Amino acid sequence: MTTARERYEAKTKVVTFRVNEEIYNDLKEIMADSGLSFADLIKLGAGIVQEEIEAKIAEKNDMRVKLEQLRGAVQTQKQLVIEVVAKEKQAQHEALNREIEIFRLFDLGWGIEEVMFKTEKCRWDIAKYFDDWAEMRGEKDKIQAELLKKCVRRHMAHLSEHIALRARKDTLEEANGQLERCRYLLADPSLVTEPERIFFLTEYLYSA
Image (tube, rainbow, N blue to C red; front, top):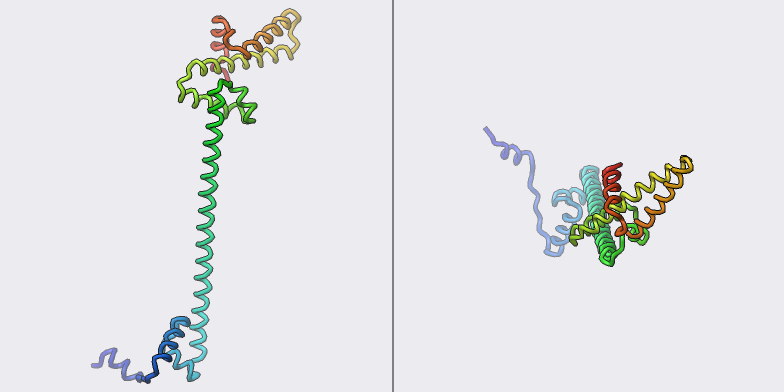
């Protein structure tokens, strides 16, 4: 019983020939570039199985094109990642500088209203910065003052709504007087009396 190797050798013949080193190197370079074997090159030179070898070359070229496309896609993705990281770092840098500037204003004694107009940011953002700053600096008194001012502003809004609804003359005068008092208190919270402080905090601290 013959082996597979013996059957293969019986069906095929070996062709060998020698070439000088220069031709050998040229053949090796062609093989590396084309992906063809020595046998393919011999067949190609002899005009044998031309279509088969051309199909093999075309497949090799198609693989090269796809490989280049893949490399290009990978490079593009890498560039996108680099740009995203750079933007994130820039955003973090800007946020840190903004926080430092706002904290500096609070250190100078500025209130939430003043910093809000200076930075052109909304009250919610500045209030959050203020809370962080006050916690970091241990400024409990300033936190309480800002809470009180917040309550005073809510009372002013309530008074303005009451006035807009055309209250009676006697209550209208009282409301205007309270409104004027609130303006003074906003300008200088230290003027708030203890009864006023209790009223504002009780009525408006936890209101929506």
